[in-house]
Amino acid sequence: MLLLALLGVVATLQYRWVGDVSVAERDRLQASLRSRASEFAAALDGDVTRAFAAFEIDAARFDADAAGAVSEAVDRAARESATGNAVRAVFVAGPGEAETVRRWERDSATLETVTWPPELEPTRRRLATASPLAVAGVPLPPGFMGDALDGEAPALIVPMTPQDTPFHSTPGQAGTDQYMVRTLPPRTAWHALVVWLDPDRVGSEVIGPLVARHFGDSASSDFNVSVVSKGSGRSLFRSDAADVDPKSADLAADVFALRLADLHWTRPVAPPSLPGEGTSTTVKDRVAITIVRRGDAGAGESPVPTGSGAGWRVLVRARGGSLDAVVARSRMRNLAVSLGVLGILAASFALILIGSARAQRLARQQLEFVASVSHELRTPLAVIRSAGENLADGVVAGDQVAQYGALIRNEGRRLSDMVERVMDFSGMTSGAVARSRRPIDVAAVVDATVSAVQPDAAERGVTMHVRTADHRPLVNADADALRSALQNAVGNAVKYSTAGGAVEIDVVATPRTLRLTVSDRGIGIDAGDIPHVFKPFFRGRRAVASQVRGSGVGLSVVQRVVVAHGGDVRIASRDGGGTVLEIELPIVPASGAVSA
Image 1 (cartoon, rainbow, N blue to C red):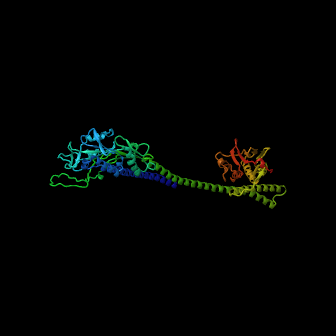
Image 2 (cartoon, rainbow, N blue to C red):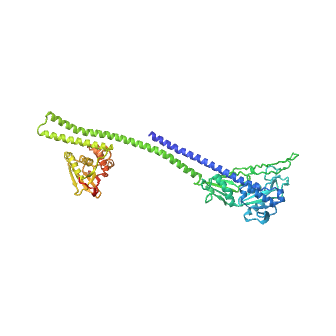
Image 3 (cartoon, one colour):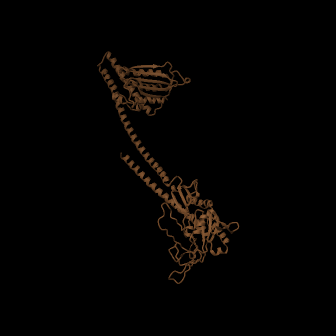
């Protein structure tokens, strides 16, 4: 009971431990997924930012040769970023160009005036309605905070603000420093490059390699990854046949945004004099811009690590289902293994208990066997000893001598039979080598058995009837072993028959076997005892209740002998009381028959 209780405690703790491990595994997978997504977003946004920076054109260079400056920017972007290789077209937009725009022609390296493509109509309206902002000497695009990238087109909007931007005293609305950020006057000249990207090439040449690097290739990755436009939901990349459903995604992160820390302006910046200062200061090499996002990010959203609003969203889902499903399957596997080990321990414990119980039962049966055999030996020995003493002392004379001789003979035979049964069982259980076999006539063995059992049957008032078929095929058997088995079977039938009863022995031939049936009208066997009657030392409840002497090895000897001869033995209760024992032995083919 203590071991069972400890086993239950271990099973309970194991269940809780596996649950804790599953929670830790889920947290680890989620942290790993967030880390991968963050690295992927940084790599993609960094590449887009490098392309954006490559298209920054000095205003003086643009005024001198606009087409040449754009050509140089295209080549520079192709060298410095993968996004630069996915450029579909470049447009130069400026003030006063509402319906038309200048497109850079790759073959002729010239700027041609064309109408806005329908796909860029939202971009055109955005530029037309933007409120241009400017920092002294810093080329911020018009409406920079939301217009630097267009995720729907997709396109990059790169500004070219004149270097000598006039400033006015009216504070701008976009910054906290009223002396540095100003709203440009409506007539201020500005231009912007609209770099139109090919979405198919972006997906295959930019996003695809980054997904393979950070999430694994489509063949070996544990995740399905999709990159879609935040506005329309248009798919730019998918690692599986279908896009990841945003509702079932394990992680959603915003990408396609500028990383301000990677933007550099190397030309001098001359801010205006601050109040109270009589001199101006020239700032060179880098301009630092800090954007403070007030309020909490929306639920399920990843903070945008850039200054510009991200236009795409990367959706990640575990290939085997959600992370919770993957962790649940892992937990079930761990539980199955753990419970399997505990089950093996429990089964081993149960087998130990069963083995111990069987050993105890066998020991008890052996003691009962020894006591039974001792009792059976004591009775004939006492009779033989008493008769011998009377003969030796001359107490008996005349006709009584013959009676005493017959008594000694019968009790000696009974004693011999008992010893034979024990020796037969001992030899079989010890694996003694079977003696040679030969084709024999079973009828002769049956006659010898009946002759051996007849005195005991006569003493008990039991009659025996033998019926044999005229045609009796031979069986290949050891005659002595077969006689011992039949003698045990018939002896049991006689022993458990009531006075005045009868034992019937039938020998019937079938096409393949010879069947011997031993029937009696005795006390019978309970149905619950039938599966156990062939076990060594087992005695049925009716036999024990009737106080019939026996060792419990007779039927075990019968079964072992019959099975050793390739036959089969069955026992059943007989209608109206009694028992029927059937023995089937394989017959010798006609070609191999030999006269007994």
